[in-house]
Image: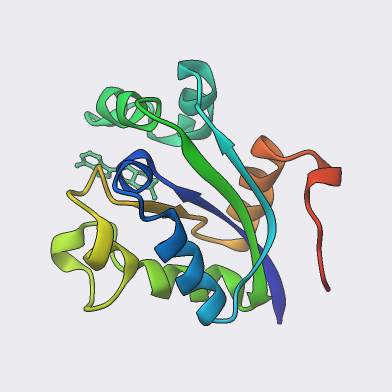
Length: 141
Ligand code: CMP
């Protein structure tokens, strides 16, 4: 089934000049870009995005990292986009990520792990609405 999901290219990948490599990989894997913008997140915007993690010990570090440099915010669309994106990213912890996944290739640590992707269709809809106006998404299905 055709789906849309939400993706972030995180500060470490942007600072390492890997935006192009990551987008190229999504396109090669059949995920199309339906929305794309750069943003330097405020503390409030990052805290709101990760609100479900607010009681975790790494929350402060996570928000500090995600606001440390700009990020790329994207809507990806395609067949099974949510699960496809998760396969392409690999495990959250790069030490556990499969060969040739984006996290294996571009993550530095569990925190600086290069990319975020929605974990379900419901999360995707919530996360897309958090960062994009309706008219910023340009669907092709
Ligand atoms: P992400 O998919 O963006 O969603 C939550 C993030 O929390 C996750 O990616 C990780 O980068 C981050 N995270 C998870 N566990 C840890 C940890 N132990 N220390 C720092 N960051 C973490």
